[in-house]
Length: 417
Ligand code: RNT
Ligand code: ZN
Image (cartoon, rainbow, N blue to C red; front, side, top):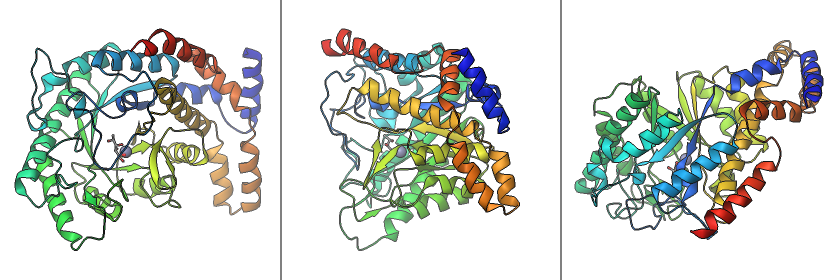
């Protein structure tokens, strides 16, 4: 393999790309691994129905039902994926001990102590999400934008509790905690008032952000969505709403773009360099949209490659917080998780192995003929050999051997659940 790598290295060098440097760089780029692929976005604090604009379909056996199982499964995924990981959890994954249970507005850092231990032992930071769904206080499909103040206040308290928990995560791990606010608030059919819910949503998020926190440690985000399941006609948190909110609260909030949340011909890859002109930092949910829905397992498709390319080309690996967001219950969940993580790693490594400076130079010289030729040539570079080297250095399989491991795990662990 080393001879293949040496030969690939020379070919890349002739394009002006240093693949050793690319590998070294990627090893330090954290990607947030979402816990919710392991149990179909259920968590441990509710009776188990996923509601609120998102849905998992499928009934593949072996899903994690306890914190221990979920952590065991995550460990398996981590062992099969190259690269630096961060843990991404939702508030509904609170771990209660000794028969205790508190509602979401009363959550405290101690309910996440086990996750902190898990992350610290694996040298990972933690990202966090208040959970504004799968809960009886989500009334009429609304939370932070509900006309009833009592409903809003419950969720504002939840958001504030999550800010405090995020600060605790950052302090415990020494790594900033990205805290993402997403609600499925919206309407199935044509609303009579589009602005009212948004004004209430705005006020509610502002109240959440009035909770004291250190912006160097806690990075609150607002995530937009064009529509949701059961809220097809209108969402309160539309793209314009969240982007404007983030722009107006730049001192304490970041925009978060989920590439499954836009009209089908819009691409987040093009939005990244647009936002980077204005925002010091931004956050992403990398997912795969199909037709009207997001949340399919990430694969190495054109848009995933393009997203990675833009982050790298803009020299923004330290300005963009990258997280994964997908959930598939119809296939082996460990495999789904792993394919998604590995695909994003491939896209990032490919981006780092692209002769970006040389291509940009051609563009700036208005040499569009050669630019097209070189962009096409760059696609044929021997990437597989660089990927193999990266995986070897990270101590994981580069080819399908990892899947043998998953099959064994299914037989030995998942099938017994
Ligand atoms: C839903 C949003 C949101 C969720 C997670 C579970 O469409 O993408 O980010 O997927 O919070
Ligand atoms: Zn998302």
